[in-house]
Length: 229
Image 1 (spheres, rainbow, N blue to C red):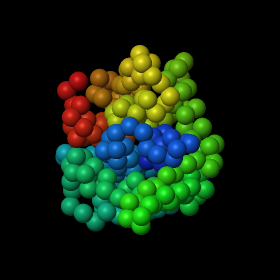
Image 2 (image 1 turned 180 degrees about the vertical axis):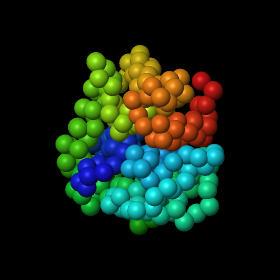
Image 3 (image 1 turned 60 degrees about the vertical axis):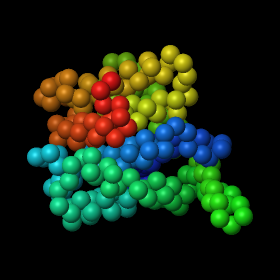
Image 4 (image 1 turned 135 degrees about the vertical axis):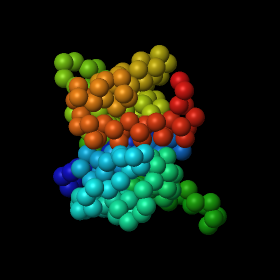
């Protein structure tokens, strides 16, 4: 991944936080699980992690140069193998604060401390540099509208994670548009081979990556109780 570009977990967070109020919209646990999955997907895209024998394993522990992903990679490489469900629970705690701090440090958002009375800690994270999120939204919009081309691996993975954590309202959609977008995002995941409805050979995505995305989406759905819809 090129330095200076935005990681998948950061893309999810930017979508979930309202630019003006600087507060998260939607399910808190959904976002945290989605971001934990996003870091693991990022590492799969970078050829560092695979899903094998029911567990997520590191096949290459060379750092990627992206600090948050590299911390997770080091943890996976040093640990015994764990299931995708287990990794999501292990990684989701504290991850949001790390990602917020990273985006603040890079001047994408800023930390507005509204702590009152010294003990109720309230922070808002309004956007300073809207170009980053605009680029993410544009990629997702293009993917939603469809057209002739399937989205690239990263965009397909992002679309699939957005659908898994039910973040469609964060795309500015309401009413029947939410359901339609959810269906389209899931379709993107199907076409990419993330859901098992398309054989891995026909997938537009590398099978090793598709498999990691597929098991993580299942793990998110299990954790959120949306597995049997």
